[in-house]
Image (cartoon, rainbow, N blue to C red):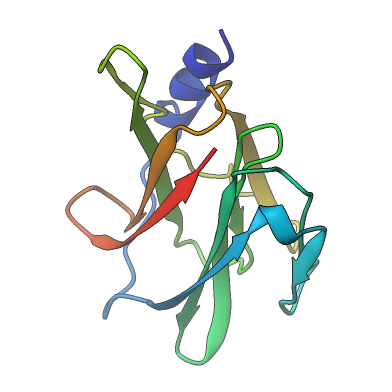
Length: 155
């Protein structure tokens, strides 16, 4: 049920404007066998809990020298976090997708934080998937037409 809720929430957002040119990005990975561990950023940082067999990722997005967004996958509890860290009318989408043990395809749909006047807006999606599942996190600028990167992780 968490997946269905996340998919519905992810597709119910208004389209964001696109950055032009596209944002730049970096990806940081952590083997969560070796956690707890953290990755700093200009806002609230990222903390990953120990999760045997898990592989976490943090995608950092930049535009014009500013830190504009981040997307995180936390293997412990299998959660996708999508942050908008700049109130500029633009936004970032993320979509997690995977195949279950029977080979069936699953996706969160496009996930985007709801824009507010807060410094940081974020949305958390509980994937509720099996340990050891390979998950792909696609990151887009405004639509699937503006793919930025894919992080490959393990739940």
